[in-house]
Length: 247
Ligand SMILES: Nc1ncnc2c1ncn2[C@@H]1O[C@H](COP(=O)(O)OP(=O)(O)OP(=O)(O)O)[C@@H](O)[C@H]1O
Ligand SMILES: [Mg+2]
Image (cartoon, rainbow, N blue to C red; front, side, top):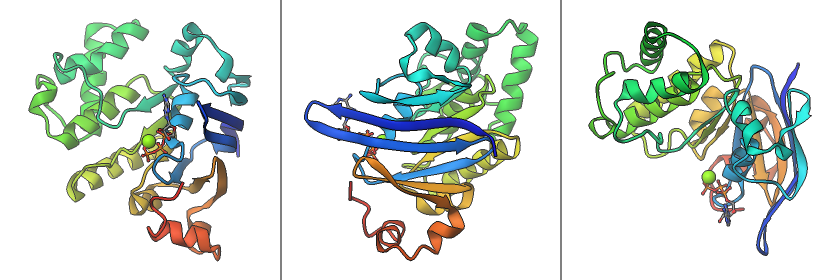
C-alpha cells in the first residue's frame, strides 16, 4: 500500500517536559488510523506538528516526498490545503453564517465562481446532514452541528489527509453516531485520516488500524482486529479503559 504521510523519529520537549522521544509511523493511503494515548501523551502535538503549528526538535514528517517539518509558514499554507486539521470545537467564525464559514476557504484558495462555491457548500451540507442550514450563525447550532460544520469547513478544499482531534468528544450518542457516519462517508470517498480519540468504540468502528502512543513513542500499531485480540497486557488494559490516564 502507498504511504500518504510518514512520521520519522519525532522528538519534542516543552521545557523539561519530554513529550515525544522517537515517534515513528506511516499513514497509508486510504486508511483511517486511530491514534490512542493517555491525556497529555502528545497526540494533539503530533497533529499540530504535521500541519506546522508546532516544530519538532528532531525528526521528519514526509509528505509528497519531502520533509514538511522544516517548511516556512508560506509553504505550510499550501500544505494545509492538502492536509486538514479538524479542531475539536469546530473553530467556526462566530460572526459568519454557516455558508460564509464554508465559503471562506474556497474564496481564499480557489477561483471558483459564486454559483460553484454555493454548489460545493450545499453538497457539503448534505454530506454532514445539515442541508438548508446555510444562513444560521454558529451560536444557533447545537454542539454536534458546530462540530460537523467545522468538519465541513476543514474538508471543503478536498484535502488528501484529514486530521481529526477528538471529533466525538462531548457529543451525545446520537451526534456521535452522525459524526462517525460522516467520517465513514469520507473514507468511502477515498480520504485518508488520523483519528485521535479517547472514544475507543467509535475508533474501532471507523478505523483500519490503531496506534497507541505511550511514553513518547508508538507502543503498538496494528489492525483493529489484531489490537482487539492482542495478548499484550498493556494493550488490553488500554482498550478496556483501565489505563485511560496513563501517559
Ligand atoms: N505549546 C505548549 N507549551 C507547553 N507545553 C505544551 C504545549 N502543547 C502541549 N504541551 C504539553 O505537551 C503534552 C502533550 O500535550 P498534547 O496536547 O499533545 O496531549 P494529548 O495527548 O493531546 O492529550 P489530551 O488527550 O488530553 O488531548 C502535555 O503535557 C501538554 O501540557
Ligand atoms: Mg489532545
